[in-house]
Image 1: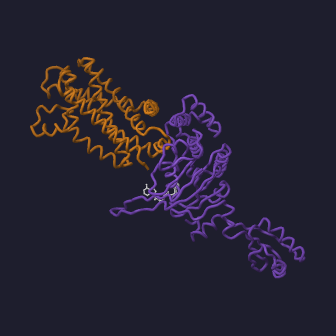
Image 2: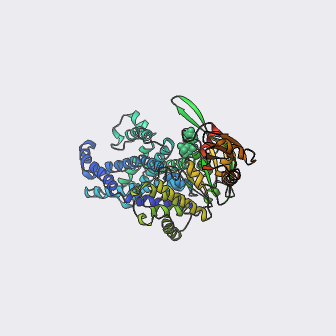
Image 3: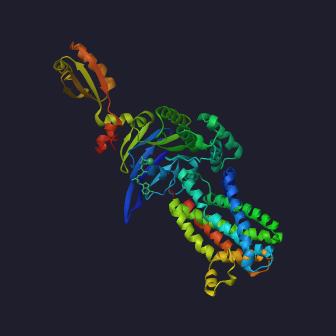
Length: 251
Length: 316
Ligand SMILES: Nc1ncnc2c1ncn2[C@@H]1O[C@H](COP(=O)(O)OP(=O)(O)OP(=O)(O)O)[C@@H](O)[C@H]1O
Ligand SMILES: [Mg+2]
């Protein structure tokens, strides 16, 4: 109960601060919309599909997963600013649950990601994308798990390195191979065998396959439950790890 | 209220490739009584903040033990957290929040209900004369206002003990004087206040008792008056036209520890200047020695520091 109460306190504060900064929201929506409008049209010929709807069925899931990964991975910067301002230390002298300090923040990141995801989905509907609502909600669940995991990882690394200068290259180094080896932007159907084999070891590749299956209306596809399971386990691990860093000393 | 024994902490710091151990705190024993303002005086890097962070459960000591407000630091840090307040040296407010929001949140993190937290925030804002700015973002506050918000955040849950790490550093003289009043008000409300400072006058004027820290160790403890007395007592300088006659008149007095004769004065080393002066006046009067002037020189805490460490605090 204390955990729920504390988490909601932290979450509410973080949400309040986020909403106070409308510029951020604008940027968060503007970028993906640009991808949708400017990048997606190139895909129809590239993927060899006949309609816009088909292209979006492949592209939109990738874009959403991409946002979940990147949105999460760069949340650590905000935490470093909070560390510097002394806000984290101020929380740590109170009896507040250490797990709540992390979870409240990660949930804020997840909610803001889902808001982005809804906007993008709605726009894609205008471009003839059609997806069954139940499947869409499951896809959002997958996104939420990804976002929880990546933001927790980012917070954990931020607490460990405590400086933007170290965090930025670290996160970029992680993000780049993850991105290239997951088939997020383009499916790996045409990739050479070795590349596909490597991608099989990339958990995000499973996640994106799961979301694609959901967008194609294939609820029963094994990729769906496999992706969800892998992401849930990883999210739990990441949250546990980062919460322990919150509990440990921070300077 | 606070009792520590042999509190120790070292840090590993890397300089290039070499690893070095910094013994930030090397065995601190101290006792702080209930309801007093206890001061920790020491130069930069003495280990004041490290000691405070250990007592506030933020870092784990390498060794030693402590009891704070009846809770054991090692065995029950959670209980210590509930009973203390801590105000960090570097501040703790978020630019985009308002003082009121910060205060309500802080109270609620201590498990206080929303309505009580709101009410308390209003009262504390009033007490610290912050009501006027309470709903402005913290980034618009002056340094002094922001520091007052920090302190308010540290006591919103009405702790038994509050740790204030250099609450007055960077404030102008007037804001400092205000801050002293705030700190005295906390004591009047029944709180035990543990404060660090590197200002001699602050330790002297504000604190009931102090410990002087240098290089990770406590070099002296006591009330400011005791410490100064322990060092050298007071010096009374008596201006006279004939020092020789004055020396003769005072030479046999047993309250004078030492007497120096100078060109137009005598210097008398006494334990307590305040009680010595009437006796000096009477002795000179009895011997009909005309008195030019009389001056009392009290040793400062800097003299104490100098005696204990061989360095002056003003220089370090
Ligand atoms: N996290 C840390 N890692 C390495 N060294 C540290 C760390 N924290 C403190 N130190 C070192 O420990 C020593 C004591 O530092 P501390 O901050 O306790 O001093 P202080 O008395 O508070 O000084 P100031 O008056 O400047 O605030 C210093 O030499 C400092 O460099
Ligand atoms: Mg300090």
